[in-house]
Length: 400
Image (cartoon, rainbow, N blue to C red; front, side):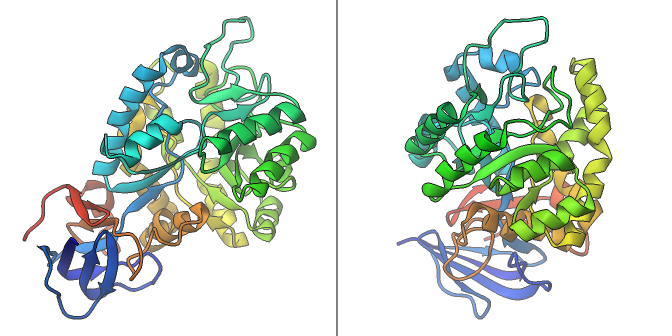
């Protein structure tokens, strides 16, 4: 049995509107007590002047997204992609993201390596390659090219009800957490208008019914109100991005119990850095189309009562903007609401009530910040931090 006590802490539990004071006690990777007097432990951390909060959850983070050129990613051997992914995962953990959902990548091999402790990583919930129709967001060929990237590290082109059923079953057989589909055009794809819905109703229902039968769910890349409605009407549970959301569609999302996962960091970073990184002109133009609308989509979703999570969707070297995503969502939502999105709301999205909370029985994935994020939100993205995963300090330094 191993134990950890964090004493003299200010505590944000992931759910409450107010902070509390006291200790957090951990035994064998689970929180056993919050508040009250300190308890004896193998290790004690004095968190005086600091705040303990749940480990952050990024619900849209691509381990295999090692560059901005998607065709180039699919041309690389998986061994190389996975090694770069390991570095990306380690960096995310050091920032305080103790869990990520990877909607467009990952596989059983990477999952097993993480579970066996072969690499430092957030808890990793993956979908495998996202499903795309021919000419959809996951079809990375240019209009005048028939060259194929050969691999399906991040996306796979699958058309037709029967083929989609097999693809879903295969992913779930291998241990995928959920299924990802491309339900509209996107920024980095070269041939699809960003607003047009993708996949037929019958094809989407084939995917969602197969996932539901296995107790899983479907996440959909979707920007326009039309494509969002197309997705949720056919059983999709989480909408990724959703920048061009309108009020009636937000109300429909709320009625369906669908989540919105905004990814504000990606558009901000691509707008500032895309040209210097060689991002295609057509992609930069599409990014400008959705850049400012992303913030308004969060506002509309909140007004309608939609559960809003947190994601980043940062490809290649843009991964270093992950904490900037918190700043951008704080600017829209305020620090308290944004923190709930990145902790307890994302945990609910994942169906993991043992994550995203500082509460007895929860997994002891914790972030200790050098300050109060509600009084000084900048400590979320610019302050010192100590990361605890499963009751073990994995990054940062702590007073003992």
